[in-house]
Image (cartoon, helix red, strand yellow):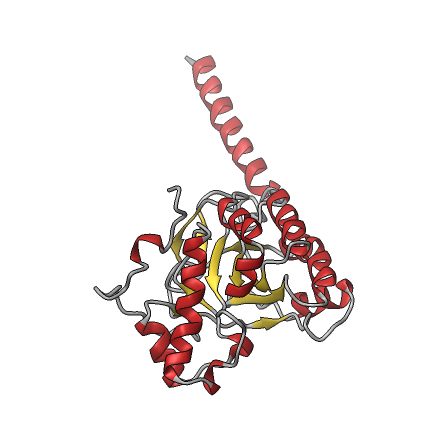
Length: 281
């Protein structure tokens, strides 16, 4: 009887001791995965979207694709229609690899200086080229130089497109080394805010900008950021599977600055079958 009670006390004391050890041990040390998620603290600093303008380039875009795919980083490519016509195979590779393709006009003009008719032509002709070359594309578009006003925004949205600007300008178009470009991006990352980075894969200084990407990815992940993409409404989305640049879902809650409301596709929209998917899907 006494021995039984002693055994019971020993068991209780053992349980309490184990609990104290667990409580005193503190939280387990976080480890960073390939996709940037920190165990126990996923994407603790928020999200980053990389976007690349003015391609495709026969030399720089394939190089950039390898960097992104090797590191499982999603991105959005805003393509110039005339350059798609010059390098259709490269444009197809971008879409086939699972990256979003957006409309960056046919010849990169400042849209606010064009007539309504010419604005529509710039966007429609680019979509026609993407369709002809069997390049899967989205509803996203970016006005060259960020030039957009109420009139151009109305024309863009009437075509079923979503204008997307940026929150971080890498200033790679000005010049600078890959180190300077990376510093410009990383310095302006803001935790838990909309981080949409502007870079270029089709300008003179694109070799330096592309060379900056590996360090930007490594350092941003070290700081607790995850890389993601934009959906057709221009909103950042949360990676559904860590480290997989194709698997993204669940739009982040809250307003999306600089992205106006977009109406549903209309009956006069001939591009409906080709938006938001590749032709092979």
